[in-house]
Amino acid sequence: MTTPSEPTGISRPRVASGVLFFDEAGKVLLVKPGYKDGWEIPGGFVEAGESPRAACVREVREELGLSPVVGEHLVVDWAPAVGEGDKLLFIFDGGVLPERDRAEIRFVDGELTDWRFVAVTDLDAHVPDRLARRIRTAAAARQRASAAYAEHGVER
Image 1 (cartoon, one colour):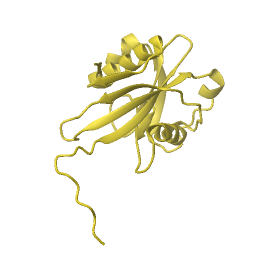
Image 2 (cartoon, one colour; image 1 turned 90 degrees about the vertical axis):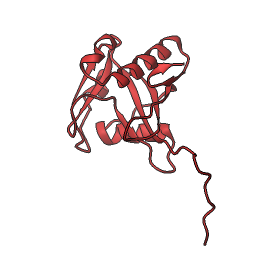
Image 3 (cartoon, one colour; image 1 turned 45 degrees about the vertical axis):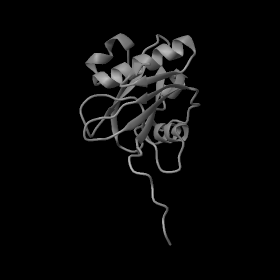
Image 4 (cartoon, helix red, strand yellow; image 1 turned 180 degrees about the vertical axis):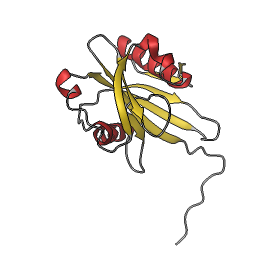
């Protein structure tokens, strides 16, 4: 059996998706991976044949033990990284995470060790610059109720 040849020069970006959950004060939920320094938003890489939204829901279930409704996408970010190649990163709107859901957070798959809500203005102390830009772009898109396209976290 032969496989059709693929055109050369075609990008094969890695695709990941995450979600922004907020508290009542508008702070963003960050999670602490046990396998690296710094904080992240809940989410992860999209598996073959999986949509970015489905990956987001799966990752939240696997990481936090929650099955929340994931809303509209807030930002799509083209963010290639040195040594990692091209990336397309999606952030979805998780809305306000109710207190009853917060009480149910469990680190199911063992990847995470902590969680906290952080003000958007304080992101730089917790996450890499490129993620801080992406989160701010997503939060602004949520505020105006209009999705954004970004490159390296900066809306275009």
